[in-house]
Each structure stands twice: as C-alpha cells, then as structure tokens.
Image 1 (cartoon, rainbow over the protein chains, first blue to last red):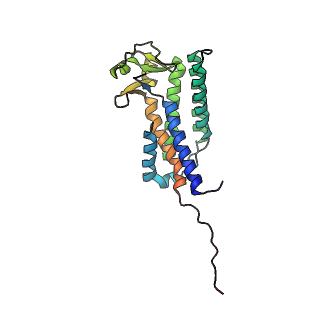
Image 2 (image 1 turned 60 degrees about the horizontal axis):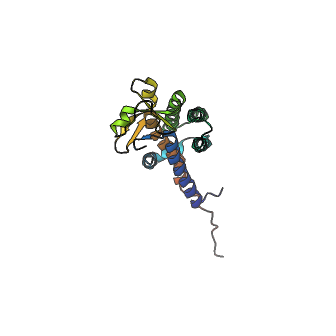
Image 3 (image 1 turned 45 degrees about the horizontal axis):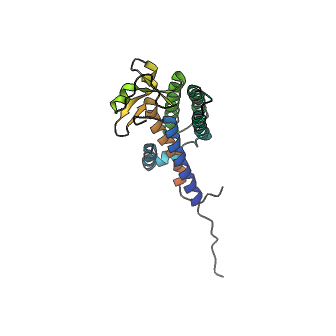
Length: 34
Length: 193
C-alpha cells in the first residue's frame, strides 16, 4: 500500500468511525426515552 | 459515543511516543466481526421468526468469544498503556455480553430508568434488547445498565465505563503511527558539470 497522506487520512477516518460504531454496538446504553 | 474519540485525541497528544513504540495491535478484524454480528442480530430481531432472547444470547456468545480471542492475540503487547486498553475493552464487552447471556436481554435497573423519568417496571421489555430488572437481582446490579446519566438521559453499565477508556486507548494506538512523519521521497541531486 502506498504510504501517502491520503491513505493515512482514509485509515484514520475509518478507524474513528469504526471505534464510534463499536462503542455504540458494545455499550448500547439504555435510553430512558425508549 | 464520541467521548472515546475525543479521549483518543487527548491521549495522542500526551502519549504519542509511548503509543508509537507499542507492538502493533493484532486481530482488529474481530471488531468488524462483532459489528457485523450486531447488524445481523438487529436484522433478525426485526422479523418474528426467532425469539429475541435467543438472538441476544447468540450475539453475547460471539462477543464473549471475540473478547477472549482479542486478549489472547494481544497477550504479548509490550506497552502497558495499550495492554490496559485491550483488557479494559475486552472486560467491558464481556461484562455486557455476560449480562445478556444470563437474562437473554440486557437488564436495566427499573429504578434507575424511573429516576430519569421513564415509567419502566421490573419485568417490562421496552425493546428487543432490554429487560427491566429489580434491585434485588444481583447479576443485573453487577453487569446490567444501572447507572443513570442525566445529561445523556441514559442508563449505563459498569462494562460501559470500562469500554469507553479501553476503546479510546485502542483508537489512539491505531492512530499514533499515522501521525508519524511521512517518508521523504528520494530526490537525486543535480550536479553542475
């Protein structure tokens, strides 16, 4: 894989998005408005 | 859910050198596997063929297995900071999964939900994922959603409190090498004759 700035930005964005989704999926806190 | 992302940014600023020196994380694909299983479980629960508790229990087993495998695969992590991130994430995910495995649903302390203005009573099932529990149920107290967070209007578990910092550390560990200087392309020097 070419180690360019563009690649790093894509990898960073994908990592942030995956982390946010994983926390949402694994924690899934109960919302009192449910 | 954005708190771990913000925390990862702060960790990057403070501990970038330690994070860069860490052993690369292994088996990150397990995160994608868990996400896929969660989406699949929601899809199945939207239908009426399989009982919600069975789907929740199968998902809980997948998450538990993924948590154990993730710890095993990263057992030789050199950085104490990243190792603590692996353990916190796995412990948090496993704690929540264990609660779902025991009850077939994620138990929510009815009293905590009511404190936030909900009219939940023990035994109620407000959602295919949750069941309201009474304060006398010890596994629900230890593993379930019991801590009301007024600002978020949410009830969180002890597992959630472990997951958030754990995921922040893991995200910071993944991002740290990306902030290293880019390799400079080799340019040949022109020499005048």
